[in-house]
Each structure stands twice: as C-alpha cells, then as structure tokens.
Image (cartoon, rainbow, N blue to C red; front, side, top):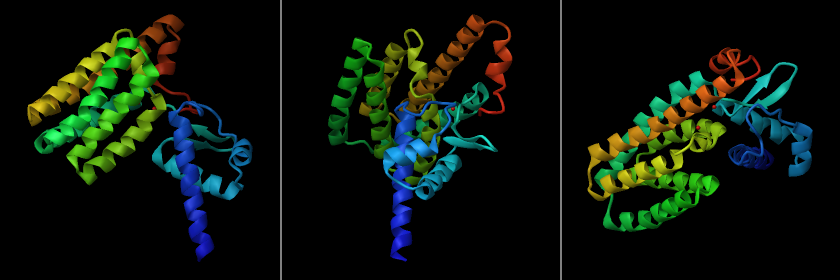
Length: 240
C-alpha cells in the first residue's frame, strides 16, 4: 500500500515538472516528447513518466498519436476563438468578485505587482512582463476566493500556456496590456465590480485580437497556401 502511495506522488511530481517545461518553452508546441531522454534526465523509470503523460493528455497539454508517440499540443486559431471568450467571461467574473471583497491591505499588496508590471512594460522585457502579468491574474483570482471559479480558470489557463506570451509579440500590445491592467486595478481600488469585470473581459479579448492579427500577418507572409494550415490544423497537431 505504501509503495503505491509513493508511486502516485512521484508521477504527480513528474507531471508538475513537465507542465513547467511546457510553460517555460523547454518543451515547445508540436514537439515530440522523448521519453528515454526524460527518464534519464529526471532519474526515473518509464512507469511514473507514462502516468504523468496521461495526466497531461487529459489536461489537453499533450496528445498521443498512434505509432508516433506523445507530442506537445498546439492550439489552432479555432481553439483560440473558443477558449478566449470563455476565459474573458470567467476572469471577468473573477474580477467582479474580487472588487466586492478587496480590502485596503489587499490593495497594498497589489500595488508593487503593478509597479513591476509597468517597469517591465517600459523596458520592453516581454518575459518579465509575462511573469508579472501572470502573478497579477493569480492574485486577483485569489481575492475572488471562489474555488469553483478558480478550478475552471486554472484548467483553461494551463491549456493557454501552450501559446505562452505570443500575443505580447504584437507591436504595441505590451503597452496596451499594461494600460488594461492599470484600469482593472483602478476599478478594484474604486470597489467597482461591474467596471472591473468589463475591463477584464476587454483585456482578454484584446489578447485574442492580437493573436488574430499575428495569424493574419503570418498568413500574408507565407502566401495563400497558409490559410488552410492556419484555420485547419494538420492531423498531427491540435493552444494562451
């Protein structure tokens, strides 16, 4: 019995490690998962690795292709069109509830996070901005203190991590995103639930707008043949 408990803990740790590798870009979208290399680098056997892979397949981060192995998933344009409106709705509700519950002490804790966000935006440091942005989203989610809402957001956020911060590469998007976050913070300070919800929804949908523009730019650069590839993912592919 004890051995089975240890094994369960191990595969969960491996799953956490793999999620981190995907979010950090160490395992890239579309990349084949080299099980032999991973077992050697992690110092584990195939059994906990394969159990961990099953967990990530269920979460939508990986996919298994018959006779080819396991691959990191990719989000198609259609996937993004389906996911972002849901995230906008859920995170909007999160901001609504946070604005109802936020205290002066909470606002003081949020202040330095927004200071860091603005500093990274001014420097044009996308990686640092992305990390600060993520911390703010999580902080607002914690303020909402709704475990059912958090569970739904966490699941979708993991899938969106496949695209990482691609939307931030669109010209001007970092500055726009920063301004949107400051507007959300202002609504929280004003204890304005409706305002916080509306600005948060706009923030998420503006990310989708940036991804649409990037897809259009890539399509134009690649030529007419790229249209089908963007809108209809290849069988070996499927996500921010």
